Image 1 (tube, one colour):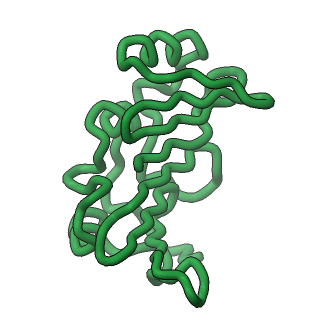
Image 2 (image 1 turned 135 degrees about the vertical axis):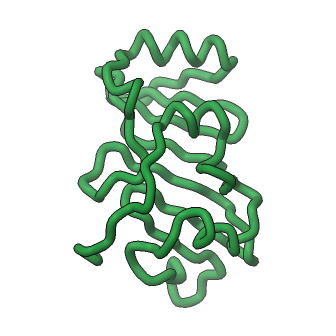
Length: 140
């Protein structure tokens, strides 16, 4: 991990949820937009494994996967300890009921599993802890 790396901007999670992109970067974008939008990655871009055609681009709590020069997934880890490019911001105090209300507005599926809840909509999956705290957001 590059301890000197700092995000070049911070963006609130609700903005990403509403737009399904980070600034102009979204699933389906050319991977040339990754550095243009996000700046230099925290670690060198690497294949998931030796034979994989999928590349991993790490920007603090944002992990971008690309294949064939196209962004295929954007994962945002809100539960980890990496430096935050995406912050909770205005939804920091949201509880489970707030998420249920948003899922109803956006017509998302609500699925309970083990100790968490998974909100699924077109192009987005949000994993919540039982208390309503966001654990992971995936744009796909």
